[in-house]
Picture 1: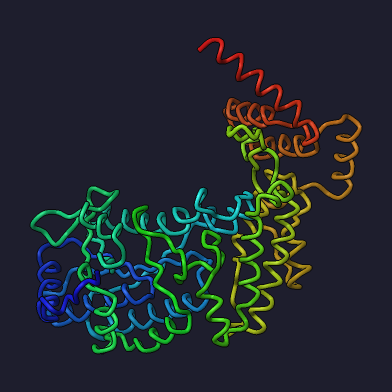
Picture 2 (picture 1 turned 120 degrees about the vertical axis):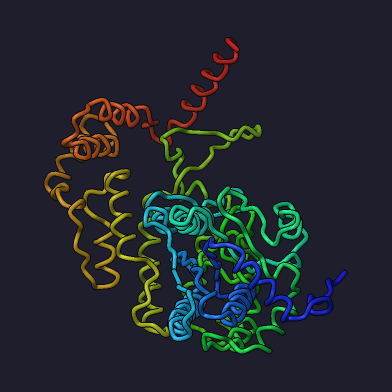
Length: 476
């Protein structure tokens, strides 16, 4: 059954009155979640019009507009969001409004490429969706917590609507506070949520956007055209685990492998954005790594903690670990080649698919976890882009070519895995200057406890694990 328009029971002026009432009811700052899509644009525009009609002396409470850049957003959306935030900031100053814009990004250690290429995390799936928390939720959480620390409490304003889905309506009803326009935040006790579009249907959103002037000088018809070209829904600013991440044909991260196909990117390419083709192909390469037949070819047989695990479904198949270093190096090469292509053929000759800070962090992890003392990241970058990246101080002090050859020779002669020795050496370098040796011993113990036998010994490893499991059962 189709929901009725909110404007059948309420006038627009009444909705503005509600927004003003909530705004004036206390001194808690507002944090508006803006994703650049139709719902969040409608919400920000609604708040803007309502607050701007107040007398100057009454519009003192701060309004922070935050937008999340995961660093792997669809380039068309990044372009739209950054341009819009700049326009908002400028217009707010000109109109004397207490509004500021903020683009929040993941910490480098949490970025998509650091996790996937650095740590070897497999491409996100429904069973292991490690990306949403790291790329979206933590960024918004940090900003919200900073404002709560500064003001004591805060109100998050979102463009979510009950009409989006049955589960969305159920969640919104769950957190409602009886007799209040505000809802409880799903995680933070000192944070509340306000959803002025809660009763809007999709047609209400578009009607409002197309019939009311954009207050920061943007074109809502351009936004409509973007939707028509991509045939997409909006990817919301995710502020908690109850907010749905992107899927189906939504705008979102161009690397998303949770969905089977990226229909929005395909439609944009069909609409003339041919320069995005390398991104679509890279995404498909990542998606292909989820093929069960390919997993053991490109992923380690042991987990990141160095342990070997088997499925308990009776098949006794191995549970694959992180991507092998060879795959990571090859994919980094493909990523940089794609970056060359989009810079040459796309709208921005300086477009970055991966940041230099991410490259430094990936190199640090490879050296620490993979014994990559030859700085492969920098070598690959120079080979593909022609640009030389200067190692940061932490990257200096690695082995020379002669020293690496000696290390190889010693390891082969004594039948010791080179990676084991490399990890022990890195632990030693990393702990120089430490006054407490117990931490060093803990690191060394952890390294030595990893499974260092090769993949050819899997049958022996399986027998040992089964024996230990059987022995443990005897004493349970």
